[in-house]
Length: 190
Image 1: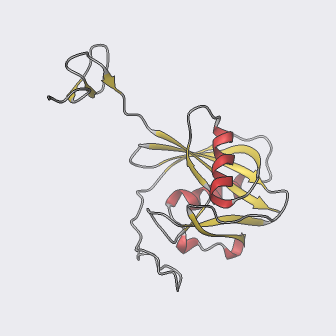
Image 2: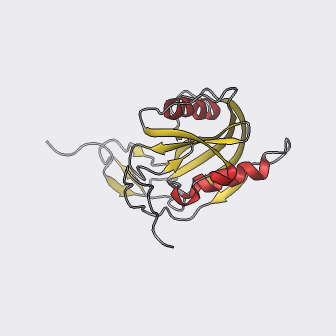
């Protein structure tokens, strides 16, 4: 049986981008960026980080987050991911930054979140969770460039109530070597 569905690349009538189109029914497959919701979670003056239990960047530290699901708001997605990855029931704060990786295949929405208690536990995608004071954050062991940018955006906006979210166009993700569970991972030299 022959292939069916969108499989021919062309610019559809009335469009300006090349798309995959089904030659039998003219159905167009739109490939658009995915929305990722993340939260900079704090308890008093400490930051909650998760050590990733999955690739990419398994063994490195990140803030809780992930892909938005259909039917949820941006904040709901951020809080759901915070609970799934860190077992933490955060109170949603404002959107503090929007990060766009160079691939432009994702848009990362960065929220502020506060915990009423210092309670968290590793979820299924995390090896461990830990609270860090600002000066103790393992900057050289962060999983992705947006994590550092998110933490810096938090610092820039933490004492402000009236601000516009920071727009960040990011650097390419660097492939980090796999972490050894017995010692901290060592990122590549710049």
